[in-house]
Length: 356
Image (cartoon, rainbow, N blue to C red; front, side):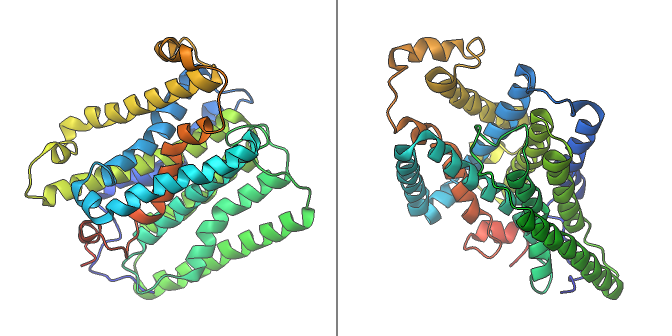
């Protein structure tokens, strides 16, 4: 499992990745420790920045790796059509049961996606090692699973989507068993990496940062602090910013390699970053405006135009409304399980990472 000395673990650019992919978990925890650990609700400004401009916006960044990419549409067109259809039908079945069942199903799909993103980053940063280590796999998963088990077995002052979406059970035995696995997996990882570094003389910095950042942000965001603001900051910043950065950095690298000119190539130039971010925020603003006008009615002043436009259809919602509104994020959760596979069929993705 010794990494190849001639191949860097970094994906694109060490400085950019350090700040945009590896840094957010540490920066978010530091921010909460200094000025964001109050036990209070998220304010409107905080909601706009964290939820709309990062969390919801990152969902739409997937478009640049899928529906907006002609090569991806050609290679994976059937998947890009099938997943939203099946996702809608699945969520519709949950919505028919009850709104709580719907939100519970969506919450657990989201949690799975959030956990697997961290595993995905670890696999990307260890892609040049001879083979994947099961110790790595257990450690990165337990870095998130232990705080989640704590959440399920202890009262928390926040929720993922809505109150009651996570199951709650009193099981000290299950909690302490999970804690034991968590501690053992971290010790095993430390011992394994220490031997590997001693043998090879190589420290895979981004890989270590991914594991430590995951453990720190999930523990402090869920276990140590017990507030909606602290959880939102550590959860959203640690997940959304690295994802958007990965999409842009991949697009930038792919554009540099491409001989074809077009708007998609220009979208990943430095001067187009405001347009790239603005496009994502506009889509997020539109989605949240529709949600607020048809369902939440929490930010009427911010989304006044949507309340005015959709006033005739507000009220009397049928069971299909929730799955329809949640379809973009559900599609993002499912697609993400396929589009970043290191050993997938995408020649562009493999060649950008120098796997060929």
